[in-house]
Length: 613
Image (tube, rainbow, N blue to C red):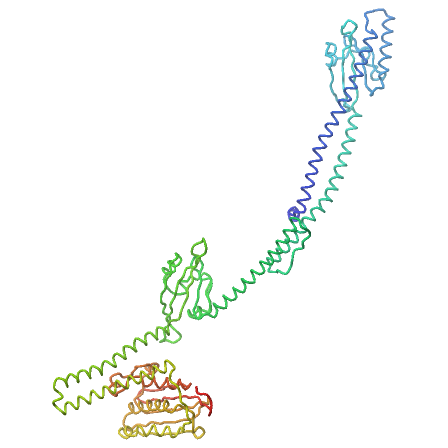
């Protein structure tokens, strides 16, 4: 594996490429040079040998050594002359020379002992046969038993009449030629190895100049991939690699800036999502939830969502709206969920919007959850308020209209009956005035136009005056009232008219719903939280548990028929709560059926001379 990775190095590849190019070029040059050299030497050797063969042939031919004289002395003389001529050529190239007659018999040969044995014997060589037939160019290369390469030439000998009278047979060794070629080959191989070595060294240096910047670029690219943007690629020159290094450094700076901006935007988006009052869920193209914010998990009652949870499973709705949104259609729906309390129901508005990606269609869904529970409650309260006001006004108006028509129809002519009708009209009119007045009070509190006028108030005096105002009703029902004020807190800075209205309403309700002979206790003290606590406790019929949470709602009555007959508008406790809230306090009610009710008003103790709440 190490060898494989080594050959993957661009430096090794460059060196190998250069070496291969040099080797191929040298080999091509060497093959051409050696081949040309070999051909040149061989041709030169052959030409020289042919020249010597032609010279010998001409010499023998002009010496007329192949005459037809059969005398013994003449014959012996010719053989001796042929032998002398042949031996004179013995030293040329170390050639072996044979002179043959027209029948192919060896007449003379070189002086070597091995050659002398051929005299008188017939040479059956094919080249000799061709030469004796008149073929002038007869040559070939042979390899003998000693692996010696030799050049063989056979030429015909003509007499003065042009008749073939014999032949010359020459065998010349080519060992010197091939040894010269081998020497040239060795020189060439040595030169090639030296050239390759030098090329390798130069290749390493050259590859280093190329691969060093590339390695630096690789290290910097790795650093950038790991998020380290403080390093820079060294620039070694103004060539292409130098320009690449400059461009890479510029790209690193731009990428660092882009990632910084992206991180900032991501943190902003994460902060916005985390602190949104609305819940947000995002899905992929398959409808699986991939992003949620804290508000969404809280609204859905989930600490975390499991991987692969679909949006329909998370919201607990059908899949059709999600599928339609993934097709590009926006939609909105209401989602009802149970709250923390058993009787509380939360209402969420879910807005489904497709996430569109350029040239890729819908890539997911954004679901925005808005808690519209309070809005729904306010809308329900508004509808109930309008209905209650309409009902409260319709009843006295119907009564007034009926009695006015009766008077118009002739009841005015009967004084006792007319006086009673007029009394009913006056009573219903006063009831309507009280209702409108209470509504105006509530309207001022809702619009925060009601200004408090605080003044130093003696608590015992205030409570005694409340009892005095209801003394007639108390005597009628034989109800016993006790007033108790803590010695430590005798005075307080209050809006006297507003608190009087609150106490009048609470004491009036206590008297209404307390049976004859009951008791009412009114007390004022400072509790552990340093708040002024004014409590009205009665022994009346009490309020059912199911109505306690709604007792301060506008127009809410526990016993509607009885309350209306007693002249109530259903707004008294609502007005009392708004006045107490304007003081920065709170009002609570605790009651048990047939045992009694305790209403406690908690007010902050405002120091003398301070700003009003």
